[in-house]
Image (cartoon, rainbow, N blue to C red; front, side, top):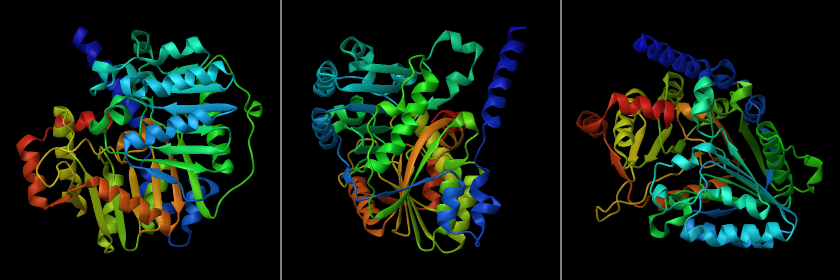
Length: 425
């Protein structure tokens, strides 16, 4: 009887997973149409158009932390932050103490942290301090979908995570990217993950991000906030951009449509940094279509030191490379053969013109099982600069032939690990 119950529960979980599938837009009639402009496709899939100037780019965790401390110190009215993983550690104590002091001085601070933070599967768990203490100084903290036994009755709450990273300060400073506020992202010094953040002085982008934040907060908290209580301003920039905020509860297909449309637009090159690449058939077909058109398609990725992720990614990359023909570059080690910190980069550059940055990985989970936030910028200068910085961060890329990727799969790849990364990565 117990086995039957477990089996039914497992089948229910799988039903929830696949019922949330939203990767069909990768190869839909809209995405692949040559009669629709790329701007029209991005708008069709829910991208909110905005104009931005060139951002300040940060590819070093310590550098970003120093800048973030400055921006928090200069805040006069409000700070809103949405994180995936958030916790304090020795290197982050100054930032959080500054936030506490600013809150006591009257600056309104709202912070959303995903409930999985307390189960962070990195070195953070040995040194981290949960952020609940921030409430004592008047910081408004919302833990999104905390992991608890009571969620067994609603398992979708265990599966769906808020993976977004955004910051708005005083309606003028807007930040998106892939770094968390935890030990391994920006608090571990030379051991920081390799990742990127993008800071814009943009009232118009700030307003869009604020709208997304307020919507998320009010859906998850009994303490509702009024967006009209936040000062916002006018002002854009010279580069056309689109903001995508994927809301899984709205059956949102925006991220899939965005990726698929841009890859269909590619004429010369695609530079993809996916962190945990696990693609279903629709996603692989999209890559293959680009490769067959003669597009130079590069995937830059490092091996995750965690055993199940390393095994899963070995299986996944063999699958992607063998079925699509994309080129795989391993950026795990430096020129001396020493391990680099994890390449946590989430970025795509198409034709050295279109830049995609934000929280989304190129995998099934980000397309179908996570709330994600992505910004697409149409600017050759910004895209080329970001690509160059990411390549510098890659350090010593090693292109692996198809045979080498398949050898890794045979040596330590695992179907179980692949499934864990596919649904949980």
